[in-house]
Image (cartoon, rainbow, N blue to C red; front, side):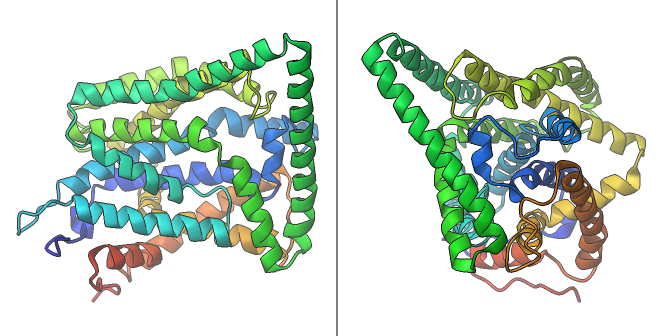
Length: 413
């Protein structure tokens, strides 16, 4: 491993990337808050833990405006950062790939600990895994990256289509139909039992009991490797393409592109997301049907359109000076994206778990939305305060120190 590489200094950072990372962290928390406070098993039952009319409206708005958009943004930014990392100079002329592999290995370890200790909905573990796959695409041509991204987006759609067809054909035979219905009933019964166990354990159980139930929930969502994370890898490739085209560096020259992106997000992204939200809240996550295929199509190809609209709107706001304090505030959050992301789980564990306030299952949708805004409103000045005194966020510093196997300067002189 080359030791001649060094981390990006604050003066070398692209501020707009940090602003977008901060915005992505906010959107991810808005979605995660739904499941930090309630059993994730409900997502697989086609039901909701919140049943009041006002909560249904709040949940719909989250799916409409947030779900499926901000992991897309975060994934694009990961791919963008991957390409920037590959451009790091090495005085010894050595490849940066071994350093990148080691960096991702550390991220995988962070993700595993995150799942074990805090939150089953972690993204870091599989970001590390799929980031390793991303290395295979570093020398692909620009057009090839987009073709691969489209093909990867099609994978979960094709898989779901085949499973739906298999299910349909199986239901035509009485013996197979009975076996399928029996298996589905058993799965639903087990999920309901896990939901009840989670409600009891998170609010009242010991730390070890909470770890056990968290791992059970994690095993429930592991099929996302086939149905969710291909989209992540595809967005990695889109981000790499955007980095090669320097879209977020030469923003003035690409102003026309962002104006079109904003129009695309409003004209197509919004109505597509409206349909996506309605279907997502009426179809169980593990259902195999034509509607389930449509959900994956809307998530894979439709939701990113609204994400592009969000990105374009932020870029144009920065150019016009609108909400300058807010965009700069999000940049501070984005510079500490890893620390702020993990801090969300730490705060949620304190609020919802038995060794904290024990409020699991007791915070409704709108209270969760308010809590999300409060957390971000605190993280903006806190991140600014921290970065005025330290070079990196605490987890960023640890990640960099382990990556380069060299003690990084933490406190500013």
